[in-house]
Length: 212
Image (cartoon, rainbow, N blue to C red; front, side, top):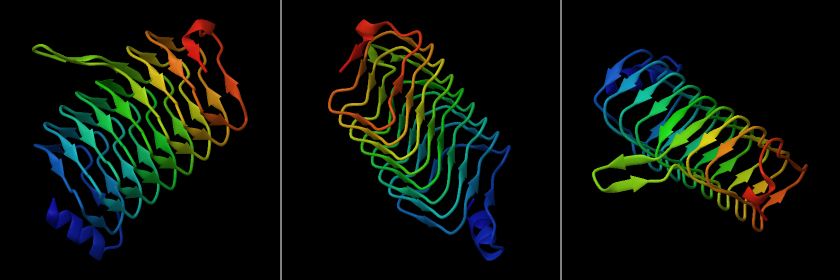
């Protein structure tokens, strides 16, 4: 992995790990010169990218991660693409700054997904995402979606999502639309103190599940 990262920097291109199998991925507190392509790869453990700066896109489309995915407090100078990814435990993007789009459409996650205090300058696409409870022994982590105190400069779309827990948008700022059509939500969606500049679209969601 280190050899490919060094070679990609020398050749001024994204590091390519597409289709590979990795035991784990740990690049915390690093500055990556270009993007990283992990599309269709398999990661048998956890992904740990805390405080990492990636000067390009992070492509994890169709990637299978057996453990958890942590990319807190870092920065991606491009898009974070987790379309159709499978994540065995939580996705934690607390405090992450993304200059492009966050794509989680059709991803399948066991455990919570957190964008608390994250800043996304583009759109957040969670269409058809599945977030389910994670259970191990006597421990159950609810399948919640957190955007508490997050800022999304584009739209946030969770149409046709399946969520085993709740959605928290408390104190969040969405500069365009919140689209939540035909979602399956076990608990409630919390909008207290949120600001959604261009309005909300809640087709198919029972009114009592929307807590303002």
